[in-house]
Length: 521
Image 1 (cartoon, helix red, strand yellow):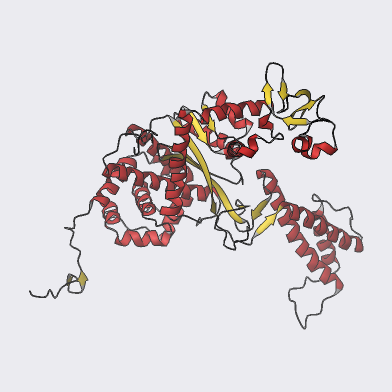
Image 2 (cartoon, rainbow, N blue to C red; image 1 turned 90 degrees about the vertical axis):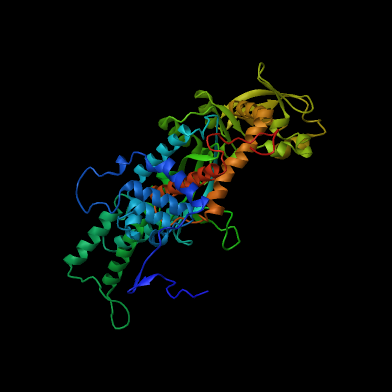
């Protein structure tokens, strides 16, 4: 057989591509999913109201499809996405005769279109519902922590800032007193005092030192001036950091990404439990698809449920019940669900512990005391009554009136109270406990068990896809709005990939739901 001398299809030094290349079924399902979910949406939110600057390199619809496709292939870096557009057949088909956007254009598109990207995600969820992929039955919520692009050792702590600010104010007060200025230094007047100090130095003809080191002898006034300048910068940083942390209810932030909070994460590069700058990413999942997502600065999940469900209310997404793990077990969440007529399948914090035999025999646990709602009385394991005493910030206080002094379970039941009180005291939030016991009954029913199994498959499975399959472990942008836009792109890519797989398997149009009586859906 003759050897083909022109393997690369070179003609006069020019490389030509044979376009008669059949694509396998994987590409066809990818393209069909992208076309069904994102190609025909309304992209007017990307259009600028003011006509100034250069026109867009390509239409936003093409850019969104290309970015979602790149994320589906695990490509997140703007430079790598640019390379992918130059060599991938699907990207070439989408671009057509348009110019390939460079990495700067891609970066600006993601950073500058947070609200427009959120609108596209909302429209894509509506399209999934129209395609029969969502049934509006149960919404699952779960969260994960993704590391910020900030430096690992750029932490700022609220308590340390308060102490250092007080020390800096004291140093400024000492220097100001030496020059006859005001000595009562506070956060409000410290900058004015430092400005007065600098004005006095200039009036006395003293020059601010512009050089330092050997051969530059400074007077005491020049040394004090330099110190005051340094203190001014430090105090400005301390005040700014303290204000930002208090406004957002945090105790830490990063110098290089002030929206990031230092959290304890499972992936610890030093393996010593050290905190890292990260964001708390929340997903709402229905039938395996992420229907809403959000970024939070909170280290815990307690206060993330209501803002996320309010987004669903604004977007008009229907659901009958809500399921989550014990990270969302607080009274406010139960009350919100009850007010909006949603069933709560939230695992109480003591659920796993109470399943143990030793816990069921532990007289000190609140769950082992029976509650009589009609008479508002608790009964301990030995049959002694605990009566209502008063209300506190933590809940209602109940106290026994007899039987505790001679009870054989006194030490096990009262623990540290045995040395302080004669009778057992119980502090409990009655309303929260009622919600927890109701939710406990819900999740242990046959329907609740099936819903919790689906929560493990769907909610945790969404993070398995985004973190393990796609390899998203660290954000590439700074700021909570930018990383939320990046996360929304990632979730849309996960939805498109899931829909493409269901198309390839012939399951599109039938919402996913795992049933206990069958092995597979």
